[in-house]
Image (cartoon, rainbow, N blue to C red; front, side, top):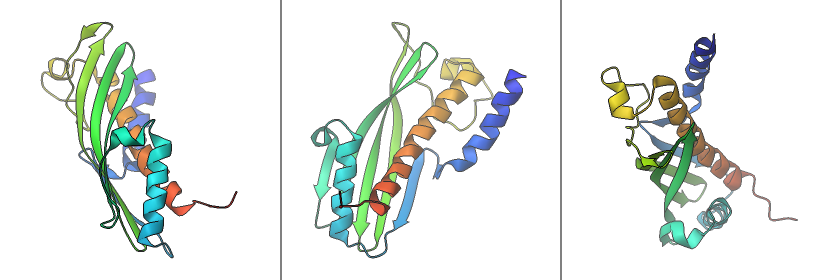
Length: 170
């Protein structure tokens, strides 16, 4: 029964992601907003989303409408801890914003206090030698992948809200 419920959750979870192969590329129409306004909202979003914007911003080209952010995220599954790094590129021009998340990679893996296998980032559990490749059983591996995708998708969703529903009035 538990496996049936878990399978149903997996089946209905994957279609909600606006990505392929751990790459997100989302264009947001921003009617009536200039590049400068989108840029200001993007910088505010970055400042609110990460502890130190200065530490994560790698490139900031205001006139070109480009900001590159390099970020790390920690995921937990049972007693396993995984660290992932990825890039986010924010692009903007009058009436359009774009967010690209790419280069997602596992850079840290521990089980209790032991170093662990860096799992590949796949949408499905490998069919051959899966436990040796991922270091996890199928349920834990898919849980890790779903958690990571949800967290990355949430960045996209939060950015959309930050750009579209920003209100300077208080």
